Image (cartoon, rainbow, N blue to C red; front, side, top):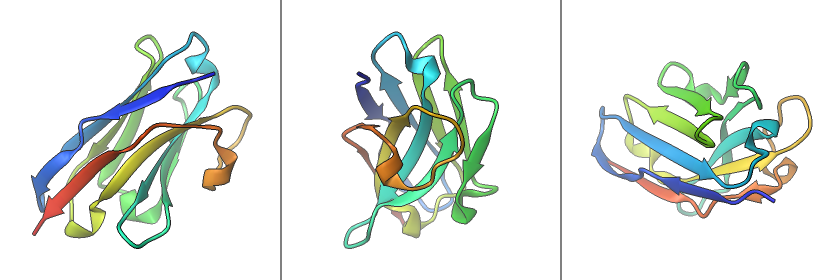
Length: 124
C-alpha cells in the first residue's frame, strides 16, 4: 500500500514557476514508478510525466518538454514536478500516481495508487 499526498499547488501568473511535491508513505516507495497527471475543468485527465523507480529515466508529454522537470528523492519518499514558463492552459488539478512493474505507462489505468490532487491555477 502506498498513500500519496500532493502539495505545492497554487495561483501563479503566466510565465511563472511552481513546484508541486508528492509525498508517499510506506517503505517500498523506491520500488514504484511514479507518474504525474492533470485534469482541467471539463477535460479528461491527461498524462504529464513519469519517472522510473530509481529516478534514472523519465518521459513526458509534448506540452511539458522544455518547461517541466521531474525528479524524485527516494530517501524522502517524495517526487517533484517543477513547472516553469507556465501558461493559462496549464491550469488543472495535478495528481501523482504510483505503479509497480517495468516500462513507461502513460495511461492512467496503469497506475494503482493516486493522491488527492493539488490545484494549479495560472492567470493570464
